[in-house]
Image (spheres, rainbow, N blue to C red):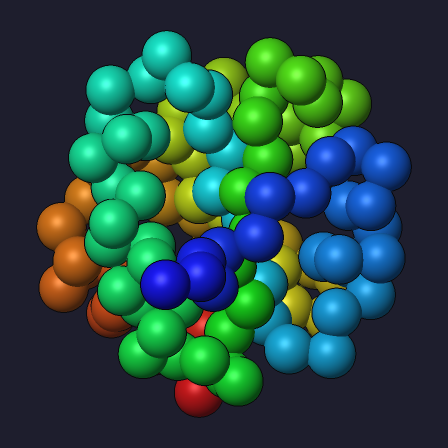
Length: 109
């Protein structure tokens, strides 16, 4: 099974997120972060559920320091929702799926 959640870097952040035609959820995470690991399967689920309506990408904060710094990411997991190149919502921490879906519905509708 291939992942619908794409790993991106600082170099392609602009093209993958800011210039995307659909809303984008950016998961700022790190491999050593326990809560980041626990929310990963939830993100895979919602990526499948909202396929075509919402794009989900991951940015490893250790390997890509520029993007987290630009968007004031201080704690991870930090889920930032972009629409038309602008931040529209932000969720910090590993949240339950239903709470995440509520935010996604606000963003995509």
